[in-house]
Length: 260
Image: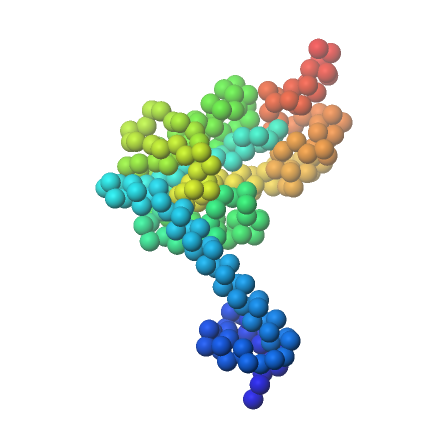
């Protein structure tokens, strides 16, 4: 007995259509069935693309493993550009059999995907650590130095310690193991991509807490970045204790208020 289009759609949504069942349906001329087959094939094609992407992003880790490195850390940061809030760095060491198709630069994922990946990475990682550098320290050191400090702190706190680290773009010194900086590393290394998600989600959660204290700035949506609304609120209401005074336009508003 043929299943209805509605029943077949439900099977597709629940990922319960097998290749064998799809082959059986190919002779079914109902337009709804053919649409389901088309959707199934597109989904499978997307899955294959994600698998290929994941394999390609393991290249650095596999090359290091061939050289004898076993504990390979990925390091990335979140929050270099915002006008408010901390900069957050994360380091993570993944097991050699770690698999998470779709893993990539956190900025290319939506909030739900990031949160799901965040929990998976934390559950399956050999170890991970997060370092948070507040806005006062950023103003004192400058954002680049604060970012490097956060990365170094997160790496040094890993237990066990890595025997090699892959770092997103930044060159770090003062570590007792070799490192490899990779431009756009969060798109080229699964370890760095995993670290980018830990850093991004951690910082977003912090900004949502800050939003509760200062809701008019809409930190829960802009995450401290200089959106039009955010800048208007700075000009109208002044700055919060979380704003980076060394960043324009925050600095410009302070100088204006001081008559400079």
